[in-house]
Image (cartoon, rainbow, N blue to C red; front, side, top):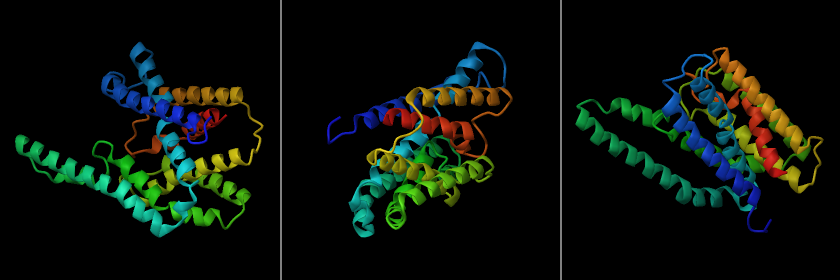
Length: 264
């Protein structure tokens, strides 16, 4: 591994990117075919792809925390926000305006109103804007997290993060919220963001884990099996309350296992 690049994290980014692509292709191709539990080829393949790719978004957020919370310069609020407004703020605004203009032309062709489209842009359900809004919220709180981390012991920081992960799991699997950028959703994904930092610090401190790579692999496999069984019982992962699928207990454990496997 070179000093300038973390190749394991680069590889994980590639794998997670492929997983995101598979999520959308899978939904487009199989979504209308296998909507109810049935022991058919389509249902098994669709469910399997749907489940094994679910680590992608949590892993992306953990990787962001792994690197963003590492840089000491990001602990300076003025410097961080000045940098972020150019690298993140303006591109996000550009994408939103571009979507709004595209919707305006689409509405004129169909002869409908633009209000529903603007509402979907506002609440983050338009295409994948929810992910951008969520990540923007995590980035915004980066200096705050770093200030908190630097005032407590690592043991406390790790314990607090694990407690927040449990809260996110309970909160989002029982949530009925509909806005992707709401405080609840940003706060929930913020726990993945912080846990990426915890894993990075543990790695730098060379803290040995009792778990080995095969054990993490076995745990991940068990989580996939349990998730498939739950889906077979009628618990689909395209839920009406958005984004709760990334916080089900099995998907959360599975995602963390994938992250730790690549770190090892």
